[in-house]
Length: 85
Image (cartoon, rainbow, N blue to C red; front, top):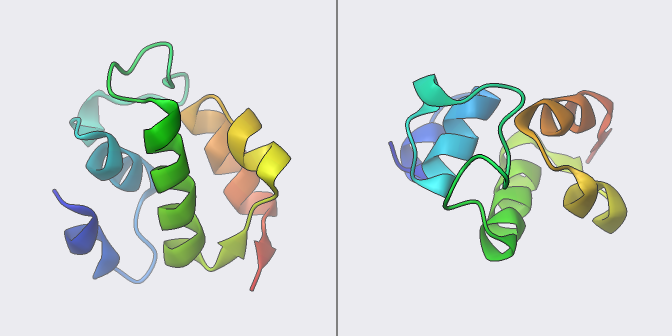
């Protein structure tokens, strides 16, 4: 699934977005997954993911929060508390 395919949804599932950006299967991701467990989750991909999440979910994540989020679960929490634009 590409990010473009996810973009067509009203508010896509976070695991689908992460999977699309990282190039992995969404069904294999858990809230504990992050750079330590997903081979393609690099700092460059983290930037791409944060930009994608901000655009898709209409939130603004601080630099500190965005780059401190090291798991899917942490990203989920940030999105719940994120400042909507």
